[in-house]
Amino acid sequence: MQKQLNPIGNSGLSAPFLGMGTWAIGGGSWWGDNDDALSVKAIETAVEQGITWVDTAPIYGLYHSEEVVGETLKHIDRDKIILSTKCGLEWRHETPVIHKTVDGTTVYRDLSAQSIIEDVEDSLRRLGTDHLDVLYTHWQSPDFALYPLEETVGAMMKLKEQGKIRAIGASNVTADIIRGYCKYGQLDVIQEKYSLLTRRIEKQLLPTCKELGVSIQAYSPLEQGLLTGKVTMDTTYPEGSTRNSNPSFQPSRRAQALKLLAGWQDLTEKYHCTLAQLVIALTGRMIPGLHVLCGARTPQQVMDNAGALNLKLDGADAVRMKWDVDSIS
Image (cartoon, rainbow, N blue to C red; front, side, top):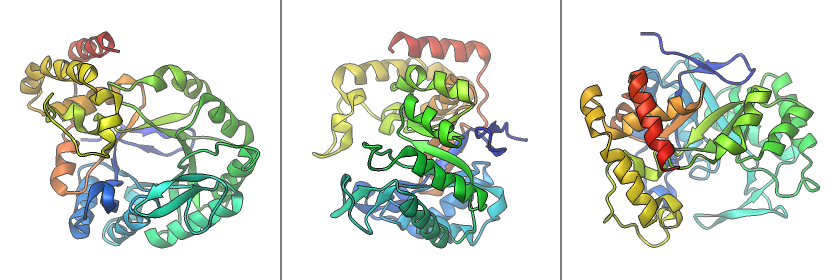
Protein backbone atom coordinates (compact mmCIF):
# COMPACT_ATOMS: atom_id res chain seq x y z
CA MET A 1 0.00 0.00 0.00
CA GLN A 2 1.39 3.41 -1.02
CA LYS A 3 2.12 5.55 2.03
CA GLN A 4 0.78 9.10 2.07
CA LEU A 5 3.64 11.53 1.56
CA ASN A 6 3.93 14.87 3.35
CA PRO A 7 5.82 17.64 1.54
CA ILE A 8 9.01 19.10 2.99
CA GLY A 9 8.36 22.80 2.59
CA ASN A 10 8.80 24.05 -0.96
CA SER A 11 11.81 21.82 -1.67
CA GLY A 12 9.94 19.39 -3.90
CA LEU A 13 10.87 16.59 -1.49
CA SER A 14 8.32 14.54 0.44
CA ALA A 15 8.24 11.63 2.87
CA PRO A 16 5.82 9.53 4.93
CA PHE A 17 4.94 11.30 8.19
CA LEU A 18 7.06 8.98 10.36
CA GLY A 19 10.84 9.37 10.32
CA MET A 20 13.70 7.66 12.16
CA GLY A 21 15.85 9.52 14.65
CA THR A 22 19.37 8.23 15.29
CA TRP A 23 20.47 10.17 18.38
CA ALA A 24 20.52 7.00 20.51
CA ILE A 25 22.55 5.19 17.86
CA GLY A 26 25.39 7.57 18.68
CA GLY A 27 25.75 5.90 22.09
CA GLY A 28 27.85 7.78 24.65
CA SER A 29 27.07 8.36 28.31
CA TRP A 30 23.54 9.59 27.54
CA TRP A 31 22.44 6.35 25.89
CA GLY A 32 25.09 3.82 26.91
CA ASP A 33 27.10 1.54 24.66
CA ASN A 34 25.63 0.85 21.25
CA ASP A 35 25.56 -2.33 19.15
CA ASP A 36 26.46 -0.80 15.79
CA ALA A 37 25.67 -3.90 13.73
CA LEU A 38 22.21 -4.03 15.28
CA SER A 39 21.71 -0.34 14.58
CA VAL A 40 22.64 -0.81 10.92
CA LYS A 41 19.99 -3.52 10.77
CA ALA A 42 17.53 -1.18 12.51
CA ILE A 43 17.95 1.50 9.84
CA GLU A 44 17.64 -1.11 7.09
CA THR A 45 14.44 -2.36 8.73
CA ALA A 46 13.06 1.19 8.92
CA VAL A 47 13.52 1.71 5.18
CA GLU A 48 11.95 -1.68 4.46
CA GLN A 49 8.93 -0.66 6.56
CA GLY A 50 8.47 2.62 4.70
CA ILE A 51 10.18 4.88 7.26
CA THR A 52 12.35 6.63 4.72
CA TRP A 53 13.42 9.85 6.46
CA VAL A 54 16.59 9.15 8.46
CA ASP A 55 17.79 11.99 10.68
CA THR A 56 21.22 12.27 12.28
CA ALA A 57 23.67 14.92 13.52
CA PRO A 58 27.42 15.22 14.13
CA ILE A 59 26.90 15.76 17.87
CA TYR A 60 25.02 12.46 18.30
CA GLY A 61 27.78 10.39 19.86
CA LEU A 62 30.36 12.95 18.69
CA TYR A 63 30.23 11.80 15.04
CA HIS A 64 29.37 8.16 15.83
CA SER A 65 25.72 8.31 14.74
CA GLU A 66 26.72 9.70 11.35
CA GLU A 67 29.33 6.95 10.99
CA VAL A 68 26.74 4.23 11.68
CA VAL A 69 24.28 5.81 9.23
CA GLY A 70 27.12 6.00 6.69
CA GLU A 71 27.83 2.29 7.14
CA THR A 72 24.12 1.57 6.53
CA LEU A 73 24.14 3.58 3.30
CA LYS A 74 26.58 1.02 1.88
CA HIS A 75 23.79 -1.57 2.07
CA ILE A 76 20.67 0.34 0.95
CA ASP A 77 19.60 2.36 -2.07
CA ARG A 78 20.56 5.96 -1.25
CA ASP A 79 17.81 7.27 -3.54
CA LYS A 80 15.14 5.56 -1.43
CA ILE A 81 15.73 7.72 1.65
CA ILE A 82 15.50 11.30 2.79
CA LEU A 83 18.74 11.92 4.69
CA SER A 84 19.09 14.84 7.07
CA THR A 85 21.90 15.97 9.32
CA LYS A 86 22.80 19.17 11.10
CA CYS A 87 25.46 21.85 11.39
CA GLY A 88 26.41 24.67 13.73
CA LEU A 89 27.75 22.75 16.73
CA GLU A 90 31.51 22.62 16.85
CA TRP A 91 34.34 21.04 18.84
CA ARG A 92 37.19 21.20 16.33
CA HIS A 93 37.89 24.72 17.59
CA GLU A 94 36.70 27.12 20.26
CA THR A 95 34.19 29.92 19.67
CA PRO A 96 32.81 32.63 21.98
CA VAL A 97 29.60 30.61 22.45
CA ILE A 98 29.75 27.45 24.58
CA HIS A 99 26.81 25.11 23.90
CA LYS A 100 27.44 22.38 26.49
CA THR A 101 29.84 19.61 27.49
CA VAL A 102 29.26 16.18 25.94
CA ASP A 103 31.17 13.20 27.36
CA GLY A 104 33.98 15.47 28.52
CA THR A 105 34.17 17.40 25.24
CA THR A 106 33.27 21.10 25.21
CA VAL A 107 30.90 21.82 22.33
CA TYR A 108 30.54 25.32 20.90
CA ARG A 109 28.08 27.00 18.56
CA ASP A 110 29.45 28.30 15.26
CA LEU A 111 26.98 29.49 12.62
CA SER A 112 29.62 31.14 10.42
CA ALA A 113 29.66 30.37 6.70
CA GLN A 114 33.11 28.77 6.90
CA SER A 115 32.10 26.44 9.74
CA ILE A 116 28.83 25.41 8.07
CA ILE A 117 30.61 24.55 4.82
CA GLU A 118 33.28 22.57 6.71
CA ASP A 119 30.57 20.77 8.71
CA VAL A 120 28.80 19.68 5.53
CA GLU A 121 31.98 18.45 3.84
CA ASP A 122 32.84 16.41 6.95
CA SER A 123 29.31 14.99 7.20
CA LEU A 124 29.26 14.02 3.53
CA ARG A 125 32.52 12.14 4.07
CA ARG A 126 31.30 10.30 7.17
CA LEU A 127 27.98 9.47 5.55
CA GLY A 128 29.60 8.36 2.30
CA THR A 129 27.25 10.36 0.08
CA ASP A 130 27.55 13.31 -2.29
CA HIS A 131 24.50 15.20 -1.04
CA LEU A 132 22.20 15.73 1.92
CA ASP A 133 18.46 15.94 1.40
CA VAL A 134 17.95 18.26 4.38
CA LEU A 135 20.53 20.29 6.30
CA TYR A 136 19.40 21.74 9.64
CA THR A 137 21.16 24.33 11.73
CA HIS A 138 21.03 22.43 15.03
CA TRP A 139 20.86 25.35 17.45
CA GLN A 140 20.64 29.03 16.62
CA SER A 141 23.08 31.78 17.50
CA PRO A 142 22.28 33.62 20.74
CA ASP A 143 23.98 36.70 19.25
CA PHE A 144 23.34 37.59 15.61
CA ALA A 145 26.01 40.29 15.83
CA LEU A 146 28.47 37.40 16.18
CA TYR A 147 26.95 35.16 13.50
CA PRO A 148 24.64 37.22 11.27
CA LEU A 149 21.66 35.20 10.09
CA GLU A 150 22.22 36.54 6.58
CA GLU A 151 25.66 34.86 6.57
CA THR A 152 24.29 31.56 7.92
CA VAL A 153 21.47 31.39 5.38
CA GLY A 154 23.77 32.55 2.59
CA ALA A 155 26.10 29.61 3.22
CA MET A 156 23.18 27.16 3.11
CA MET A 157 21.84 28.70 -0.10
CA LYS A 158 25.31 28.34 -1.64
CA LEU A 159 25.43 24.66 -0.64
CA LYS A 160 21.99 24.20 -2.21
CA GLU A 161 23.11 25.84 -5.45
CA GLN A 162 26.09 23.47 -5.49
CA GLY A 163 23.76 20.47 -5.15
CA LYS A 164 25.26 19.43 -1.82
CA ILE A 165 21.95 19.94 0.02
CA ARG A 166 18.41 19.83 -1.34
CA ALA A 167 16.41 21.48 1.43
CA ILE A 168 17.16 23.98 4.20
CA GLY A 169 16.09 23.34 7.77
CA ALA A 170 16.50 24.96 11.18
CA SER A 171 16.00 23.51 14.63
CA ASN A 172 15.17 25.16 17.95
CA VAL A 173 13.94 28.44 16.49
CA THR A 174 11.58 31.36 17.14
CA ALA A 175 9.00 32.85 14.80
CA ASP A 176 11.33 35.80 14.12
CA ILE A 177 14.17 33.45 13.18
CA ILE A 178 11.87 31.59 10.77
CA ARG A 179 11.07 34.92 9.12
CA GLY A 180 14.77 35.75 8.98
CA TYR A 181 15.63 32.55 7.10
CA CYS A 182 12.88 33.25 4.59
CA LYS A 183 14.00 36.88 4.22
CA TYR A 184 17.61 36.00 3.45
CA GLY A 185 16.99 32.87 1.41
CA GLN A 186 14.55 30.09 2.17
CA LEU A 187 13.46 27.70 4.88
CA ASP A 188 11.76 24.40 4.11
CA VAL A 189 11.39 22.73 7.50
CA ILE A 190 11.93 23.27 11.21
CA GLN A 191 12.62 20.54 13.75
CA GLU A 192 11.14 21.21 17.18
CA LYS A 193 10.12 19.39 20.35
CA TYR A 194 6.42 18.52 20.15
CA SER A 195 4.19 15.97 21.84
CA LEU A 196 0.65 15.65 23.10
CA LEU A 197 1.97 17.09 26.38
CA THR A 198 4.28 19.78 24.94
CA ARG A 199 2.35 21.81 22.40
CA ARG A 200 3.89 25.29 22.58
CA ILE A 201 4.76 25.34 18.85
CA GLU A 202 1.06 25.29 17.92
CA LYS A 203 0.75 28.90 19.12
CA GLN A 204 4.34 30.12 18.90
CA LEU A 205 5.53 28.74 15.53
CA LEU A 206 2.72 27.07 13.57
CA PRO A 207 1.01 30.29 12.37
CA THR A 208 4.30 31.59 10.92
CA CYS A 209 5.08 28.21 9.33
CA LYS A 210 1.64 28.10 7.69
CA GLU A 211 2.05 31.62 6.37
CA LEU A 212 5.48 30.94 4.85
CA GLY A 213 5.01 27.34 3.71
CA VAL A 214 7.50 25.86 6.19
CA SER A 215 7.02 22.23 7.26
CA ILE A 216 7.49 20.99 10.83
CA GLN A 217 9.27 17.86 12.02
CA ALA A 218 8.52 16.94 15.65
CA TYR A 219 11.08 15.32 17.94
CA SER A 220 10.37 13.64 21.31
CA PRO A 221 6.76 12.77 20.36
CA LEU A 222 6.62 10.14 23.12
CA GLU A 223 7.86 12.67 25.70
CA GLN A 224 10.97 10.69 26.67
CA GLY A 225 8.92 7.52 27.11
CA LEU A 226 6.16 8.98 29.29
CA LEU A 227 3.57 8.44 26.54
CA THR A 228 4.46 4.80 25.88
CA GLY A 229 2.29 3.44 28.70
CA LYS A 230 5.34 1.88 30.34
CA VAL A 231 5.87 4.64 32.93
CA THR A 232 3.98 4.65 36.25
CA MET A 233 3.73 7.13 39.12
CA ASP A 234 6.34 5.02 40.92
CA THR A 235 8.90 5.05 38.10
CA THR A 236 12.09 6.85 39.15
CA TYR A 237 15.15 7.96 37.22
CA PRO A 238 18.81 8.28 38.23
CA GLU A 239 20.27 11.57 39.36
CA GLY A 240 21.17 13.70 36.34
CA SER A 241 18.46 12.27 34.09
CA THR A 242 16.76 15.01 32.08
CA ARG A 243 13.43 13.40 32.90
CA ASN A 244 13.81 14.68 36.46
CA SER A 245 13.69 18.27 35.19
CA ASN A 246 11.10 17.65 32.45
CA PRO A 247 7.85 19.35 33.57
CA SER A 248 5.82 16.49 32.08
CA PHE A 249 7.39 14.04 34.55
CA GLN A 250 6.46 16.08 37.62
CA PRO A 251 3.77 14.34 39.73
CA SER A 252 0.71 16.39 38.75
CA ARG A 253 1.47 16.42 35.04
CA ARG A 254 2.55 12.77 35.05
CA ALA A 255 -0.76 11.83 36.66
CA GLN A 256 -2.64 13.68 33.92
CA ALA A 257 -0.63 11.86 31.24
CA LEU A 258 -1.24 8.43 32.75
CA LYS A 259 -4.97 9.14 33.11
CA LEU A 260 -5.05 10.20 29.46
CA LEU A 261 -3.44 6.93 28.35
CA ALA A 262 -5.66 4.83 30.61
CA GLY A 263 -8.68 6.34 28.88
CA TRP A 264 -7.48 5.01 25.52
CA GLN A 265 -7.05 1.35 26.44
CA ASP A 266 -10.23 0.46 24.54
CA LEU A 267 -8.69 1.96 21.40
CA THR A 268 -5.57 -0.20 21.67
CA GLU A 269 -7.90 -3.21 21.60
CA LYS A 270 -9.95 -1.81 18.71
CA TYR A 271 -6.89 -1.11 16.55
CA HIS A 272 -4.76 -4.02 17.83
CA CYS A 273 -1.95 -1.62 18.63
CA THR A 274 0.15 -0.36 21.53
CA LEU A 275 -0.40 2.92 23.34
CA ALA A 276 2.82 4.24 21.84
CA GLN A 277 1.60 3.49 18.31
CA LEU A 278 -1.70 5.19 19.10
CA VAL A 279 0.11 8.27 20.41
CA ILE A 280 2.41 8.47 17.38
CA ALA A 281 -0.52 8.14 14.97
CA LEU A 282 -2.50 10.85 16.77
CA THR A 283 0.52 13.15 16.97
CA GLY A 284 0.82 12.95 13.20
CA ARG A 285 -2.75 14.21 12.91
CA MET A 286 -2.49 17.07 15.39
CA ILE A 287 -0.92 19.39 12.79
CA PRO A 288 -1.69 18.92 9.06
CA GLY A 289 1.40 17.72 7.19
CA LEU A 290 3.42 17.16 10.37
CA HIS A 291 6.54 14.98 10.20
CA VAL A 292 7.16 12.94 13.36
CA LEU A 293 10.61 11.69 14.35
CA CYS A 294 10.88 8.57 16.53
CA GLY A 295 14.19 7.23 17.76
CA ALA A 296 15.21 3.57 17.60
CA ARG A 297 18.38 1.53 17.63
CA THR A 298 17.14 -2.04 17.27
CA PRO A 299 14.98 -3.66 14.57
CA GLN A 300 12.32 -4.47 17.19
CA GLN A 301 12.07 -0.84 18.26
CA VAL A 302 11.71 0.13 14.60
CA MET A 303 8.92 -2.41 14.09
CA ASP A 304 7.14 -1.05 17.17
CA ASN A 305 7.29 2.47 15.73
CA ALA A 306 6.37 1.34 12.22
CA GLY A 307 3.04 0.03 13.49
CA ALA A 308 1.91 3.66 13.70
CA LEU A 309 2.58 4.18 9.99
CA ASN A 310 -0.29 1.89 9.01
CA LEU A 311 -2.65 2.86 11.82
CA LYS A 312 -5.63 4.70 10.36
CA LEU A 313 -7.72 6.28 13.11
CA ASP A 314 -11.44 6.67 12.53
CA GLY A 315 -12.46 10.31 12.42
CA ALA A 316 -14.62 9.99 15.53
CA ASP A 317 -11.79 8.36 17.50
CA ALA A 318 -9.32 11.05 16.44
CA VAL A 319 -11.76 13.78 17.51
CA ARG A 320 -12.30 12.06 20.85
CA MET A 321 -8.56 11.75 21.47
CA LYS A 322 -7.87 15.35 20.49
CA TRP A 323 -10.63 16.44 22.86
CA ASP A 324 -8.98 14.46 25.64
CA VAL A 325 -5.60 16.07 24.88
CA ASP A 326 -7.13 19.56 24.79
CA SER A 327 -8.71 18.96 28.19
CA ILE A 328 -5.27 18.71 29.85
CA SER A 329 -3.50 21.37 27.79
